[in-house]
Length: 500
Ligand SMILES: [Zn+2]
Image (cartoon, rainbow, N blue to C red; front, side):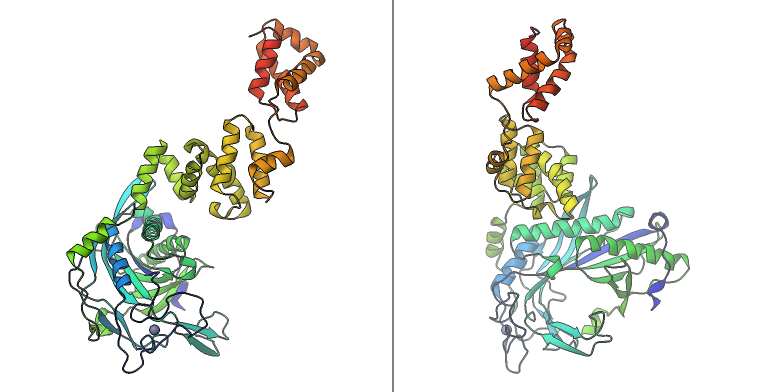
């Protein structure tokens, strides 16, 4: 393999060369039926059970476009600030692949449904506007399963199986314009773009956007050139299937291409595969040009001609998009940019929003999710959202602290109980006996006992050395097993000794 080329350390690579990135994202739409037939578009059926003559490409079958898929695509285009074509056609993209029964894919070529939009993202406080070249609609292919080899690839396999259930599921491709000017941030910008796009698609409810299941897949284009020079030759890293891998794939290509350019060689235009284990890319096939596919307008389908009225109706029903929601929540919560960025990076925005909706103050909700709960998630090696605690439970714990029923220390114990599956906060407070000792008589008894046991300290306090009260507070906290409010205890001690 030629993929063993040496790499240049990242900081050096971006010191000598300017990266230009581009992203092509495929999104499986969550429609009930497939793109051109009535077969169910859901996952999980027995192999080759969700098929019919149309999606198997049998002779005489004719496709009919799924109106819901067209509607979803227009909604995506509108959310990405695109122009919506008033008339466009599907095209045949001709090539052979065993998981594509018709030997062509119905796609869109020179007449995409949505064109020329943008998506704004923020990285480390810097704003980037990512241009959207096009959003077009096509059908997915089936799936091949290569059996017997070590890698799951066709090389070395004994035989291959084909499942056509996925063939014909509506697929939207979102293609960015080339993104120059990101410098060393290129990998992070790529990741931030895919993250924001995923969140937009989720808000639109057009897809379940699960990268690990392939309903959101990303091809990452990367090129390098010396500053001021014409853009370099790009490579296309295929089917990168996690947000982290998007970032790593760009970084890896920058390090590799810099070594190629340093050696005075040319970067080959090709597709490359990203390997999760090594974080490196290896060459795939050399890149086809559009003319290789012999595109022509699909003769079996009528053109798509969405009326201006329909488009405006869809625009009017767009949901609040993630960027607008973030801005609104930030204004409502009064949190600084840094906190909002931290919430976003931690995947805690929705959790905090739900916790605030359940009655906690924004500051408390932020504190719990970014503090104690983030620590638990780190320790468990899991996402915040996967922790076995609900926003309502977090809000209840925060409420118990705010009302004085729990100290911070006791509240952390209650949280431990919730995470251990012991029940709701109130049940745990009762079962573990964690309530703050707030009964005045009990507290005064403990205060008097502490004074009696420490006569010299008490005398100093009587003489006005109130700082000495710390020792007595400590004694009372010990006597109440930490279940008293220290500030209240201090007040009682000073009152008892004539200092307030
Ligand atoms: Zn079908």
